[in-house]
Length: 103
Length: 217
Length: 280
Figure 1: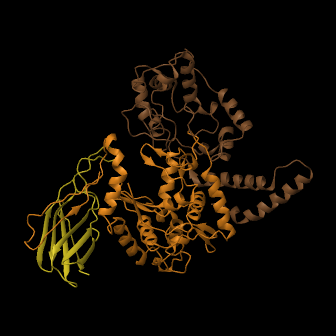
Figure 2 (figure 1 turned 180 degrees about the vertical axis):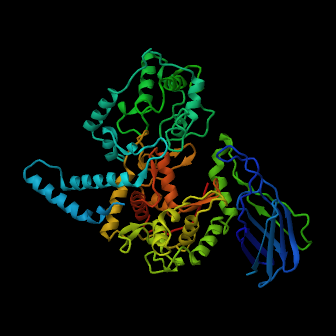
Figure 3 (figure 1 turned 180 degrees about the horizontal axis):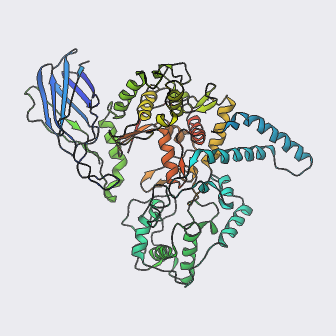
């Protein structure tokens, strides 16, 4: 079971600013371990963000994103108390979904 | 773990009293020096309990020679002239020149040795040759921008000093045992401590003293 | 090198104006580009404002702190870091300190081990099985717990008391150790950290014999090491410095490690603790 994300969502003017930290190895498939064996690629492929029930962001990621990724973005609208729900799916089909309330 | 620690203060007082008694007989250091010696003894005992041997780094690495012991006292201030003279004399006596008298090797190999930071750490493979990591502290060839400033720039060393036999002997000896020339320097003693082989020192001498070396171009 | 990736997500809904910032990995950079590494790290820190990945460790540490564990099914709520059982807020800023129940001066990490052994019933070997983690396959509870505890001292002034003679003894021994030259390279801590404005390669070195540098350095550890993708603790910092000093292997939580920590922590007294930090 993957670790929880750390999500912050705050109203700034007329936009909602979302900052999220994800816990993931994001192995590129290019690195080798200490015995010289290639560490297979293992990375988050899809990220979806819902504002309440409406999708506001969909991203496809590759191996160029860092370990333990941090993503921040803004979307127009939103109100205090709204829910922001983030889901990632990696190339092993592991997934994690977490939510935060807009503050 | 060192159970003795909680009794340190008492021990310190005992040493102070002993020191005071000794002064009456006119033959001891100051109480402050005695206390320092007591802390030093505790420090060494504690370190021996707090490290474990790992790979090529045994606990004997914690044992100090004369130079190390004296220089531990003069880390932020230079040692007094008499101490400096003693250290430099002792180390100069340890410098060994190569049996065949050949001081210059291949500057290209010297450059690789100057770049390589690996060697002598418990995490290093002792079968692989150690580097000198000269660039960690010195500027050398100008194309390498990632150089440290712990030591002076050696850019154009040979060109400025002159390509003489005397200077080549000086560079050999300085790399072999830097303490022979400036007591309590931060520079390791690469020959004296068998970090580099004779052949490697030759290559480093060439890096500094060969007119074709990028250091002198 | 960290860079910003700015793009408009194609699939975002029309009302979603998005400027996305995503962290990219640090890769080795050619020498000529390294001049800007410090600046790039600073930019990375700014990009991650409020988003130091150490927070992921803090969250995991908090969960471990509150979960009963070991043969005795005890949580860390009974663990006294010096301010009373279970009290975490501000505790790190006063460590190391003397713990009468242990009969030793302990730093945070050795105190956590003490609680695991004496309150939770783990063996010392179990408690210290993974001190320094490596990825999600080999994680260290101690790193997570440490990240959680130190974060509760963020903004608290460092205040390591030397009034207790046990602590003062450790301070004096730590000081001696700081200047102790030995090993194949004749290095002491002071060799690299005893003068102003020096650097190794392009890495600036704090002069830990100066108050301001000592304060800045100590209060920024433990830290998320970007190049390793891990939170590293102060025990790790000392262990890896001494490895590069060509010393043998510093035992985790050993008296010498605590003595050195006591010396460096007390020298930071008066400065506001500001961790977990973020380092290259």
